[in-house]
Every structure is written in structure tokens, then in C-alpha cells.
Length: 280
Length: 350
Image (cartoon, rainbow over all chains, first blue to last red):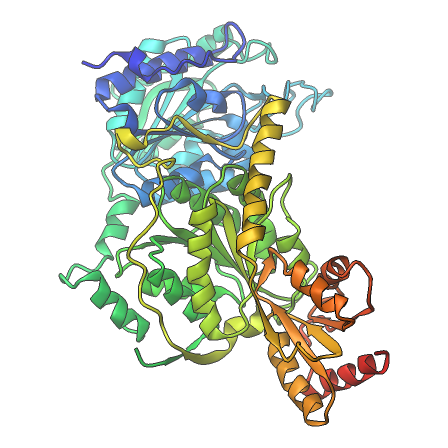
């Protein structure tokens, strides 16, 4: 088996000491190792934010792209070079605020990639503002009198948009995290893992302890093929369930695109000649 | 091959395929939609990819991703959609990713209308996005050039690792004309910097971030050294009776077509009028303009805007000679008679 260290770059993570994202990094390295991928077979894509520094710390192809835009960049990569294994990384602000529009459409297309979100309920890189997963009344520098908005349910958004692998994990449980990542990487289709990964510097409310206290593994008899069941578990505001909510086999975007290509054995030049005259 | 009678927008799609474009990511907008529709119809059977994105922003970022893996890739839109793409264009320029963006410009500001305008000159030629970068800008004035300059755009994009914009107005996009297709491109430059999926093309990171001021300054200086090379090698323009002219009209896109007829009318009456049509809006034919100014010629810049390119002409001639400006906006295109009269007005001052 490959060593997790072979996927680690020489760049030392810039995250604060104690940041939840270290556990995500180590679980990712171990999942890569179990997948047995070569370095050049992996593309790590991110947007902007603390967690989006991720590709710098990996020895894979890395794309540190634009705030909120990791998923369309990843879609471009996957459709242009389907043989590469694409893993997108980001945070709750990047993915569910500025990138929310891209998130639902990437799920809808069932693009064959893994999307790992480090969800800390706050903007960390910009030093502590309210995010779309921040709770109501949560006080930050941008909500000094308390947050006036309700939080988004990322897993509900993923499920209702057509994601075919949806899971939630905890930074405080790296062993399970690795299993969830491995499942996502093995899955053919849009796989999203929302990781409750605390920001120890700017969020004193959603901590390792409170995330652990508020969460609970999905019941053992949870049926991962039942979309309605998965949605109701994801909607549950009394407890944040962890584990695999939903898994489905469905054609991926690449299958549909591939099916449209000419398969009648004509040479490219011949096809082009026809196209120039307005025929396909 | 015999000539085919097609719309300018369709010529873009076919030119792109001939140039070996492997992916198109776009979003519908009038008057550029035929490019997306053409790509949807023709790309997939030819083994290329077409995807309708969720937004212009989605589309330009898919272009960013596909360019990163080393394929020829494009998008197209019209003015308001191009404004949305500006973020991604700045990042692509910063990350040195070759890609082609076609702008079939329409009336603005705001929603404006869907009639032809050239109000995008500033946003495309002067930047539009944030930071220090430059786009290569090609301005076709007929369906044939929509094909040819789209093909050239891919070549220049790869050669200089930079986004290239084909800037046309709604007229050029919508007009039908005969087009003779060139031979398809079959040899492509190697892209060792791209994510090729092989150990040989291995590169750790494609990014536009340089947190250290000295690193970023070095990177920007590198970009500008590249732009200097573009300026030295890639200036393209067309002259029409400019040699003996007292008044040289300067115009691009559809305006140059009408001006050509107006110049013919004036010439028939013995008036010494000519035209310089920049084909590359950037790099701009500054040197040629300053040479013409040194010969004592005066200028009339005609645009479908309130006077955007005219500033570049005035800079090029260093205000040494009068440079007149005439523009129509809102989707109005000057008539032949109107331009003929403008020529007469401006000749009076010569």
C-alpha cells in the first residue's frame, strides 16, 4: 500500500495550532494512500479561505482557484480530462455562500468528483465573520448584535440537488473521517462530505466539544438508499447526524457527454468537413 | 473548399473546431447565443465537449479548469455576461492560462439592449478585471474574420499563455456572409506546465497568488515582459487608401465596413480620405498611427460608443494633430450618408 506521506508536500500548513483542518488533511492523505492513486492522477482544487489552502499542502496537481469557484473549475478539469481523479476542497463560506449557485449545479450534473467541505460555521481567513452555516443569534465581527439569519442545511441542499454520495464527519473523529473520504473517492458521481471542523481562533461557540456534543452517528439501521430518509435525518435540527446519509448509482455527467460523441467510425477530418457544411 | 454562407457567430464555432478547440462552456445571452447553440450542435459529434454552465461565472471558471489541463477551450458571451466573466479572466491572466473569450457586444450600460454597440472597448482593452494584466484583443469586421481571427486567437493564446478576446459587435455576429474555411489545425504546441496526468507534466500548483510583495512584483514584471513581446510581434491592422489621405478614419468592426463605402463616395469626388482599421485592438497600432500623424494627416475616429478608442488614437499621435471623434450609441449604427457627411465636416478642418 502507498504511504500517506507520499501525498504530502513540503509546504507546512498555515492553519492555526489546533485547527480542525489538520485532521481533514491527515484523513485525506490516508484515503489517497488506500485509493493507491499516483500523485499525478490526483487534482486538488480549491477556492479561497483557510481550508482552501489545502492544495498547497498536497503533492498532487493543485489548483488554488477563485473564491466560491472551486466546483466549476473542477468541472472544467473533469470534463476536459476525465481520467484524472478530482477532489475539491473548501469551506462553508466558499461553498455555501458565494459558491452556493455552483454547488447545487455541480450536484445536479452528478460530476464525478469528491467535494470535501471544512465547515466551521465562520469566515476564518478574513478573521471572524458570520457564515451561511452560522447559527441564529451567533455573534461575530459582522454580526455584533447577533446573527439575524437562519443557517443553511448543506446536506439537504446537496441531497435535494442530486448529489449521489452525501456524508458528514467530525474532525475530532479522524478514523471515521478517513472512511467517509474513502467512500467518497470510491464513489462514481458527485460525492460531498461536510466535515464539522472547528475554527479554534474565531469561533468559540462551535468547538470540538460542542460539535461532538451536538452530533451523533446515524442510526445503524439508516438506509443509505432512501433519499427521503436521508433528507429527514439531514433536516433534524436537534442533532447533527454523522456518517453516510445517502448513496446512489446514477450516470455521471461524463457518461452523458461521452454518449454524444460520434461513434460511427468516421475520421475527425471527415466529421469536421460535414460540420463546416452544417451537418453533424 | 467552396464558400459557405453563414452567420458570423457560426463562423466562430467552426473556426474554433478547425483550431482544435476541445471544450466550450457557455451561458445563453443575446446576441451571442448562436455561438453556444452552434457549439452545442457541433462540438460533441466532433469529439469536443459542450456544457451549458449555471452562469457566466460558472462558465469562465470551467474554462479556467479546462485550460489548466492543457486543452484548447473557449467561451462566448455578450457585454453584461462579459462583465460577469471579468473575475475569472483576471485570474486566468494571472495564472497564465490560455483561453479564448468571444464578446459579441451589445448596448449598455446595465441591461441596455440587444442591439450592436462597441461600448465594451474599455472593459476589454483596458482590463475590466482587477490587477495588472493585459488581454490580447482581436476585432473582426466580417464573417470570414470571425472564423480566421477565432483560429488566430487560439494560436496566440497558446503562444503567449494568455487569454485572448475576439471582440465583435452584434452586427458582425449576426450578419450572414460567405466564408471560406481554412485547413484544420493538426499540430499543437506542447504544454508542459499543464496538468497532463503524467509524471512528465507534473507540476504542483497552478495559482495566481503571490503573498510576498517581491514575488508578486516579479510575477507581474514577467507578465509585462511577455506583453512587450506581444506588442513587438502581433500588431495587425488594415489600411484603406491611407497613403495619400489628408484625413484618416480609424474604426473597427461594423463601422469600418460602412466607412469603407463612405470613403469610396468621397474618393469619387476627389477627396483624399482613407482608413486605418486596427485588427488587434491590443496590441494597438500606435506606431503606425504616429507615422501617419508625422506625415501631417488628421484623424477621425468613428465608434459605436461615446468615444473610447479615440483616446488611444490621441495618445498614439501625442495630440500632434487634430483627432476628431464621432460615435453613435444605443444600438444605432451610422448610415453611409451620415458617415459621408462626417467625413466632409472633418475634411473642412484639414
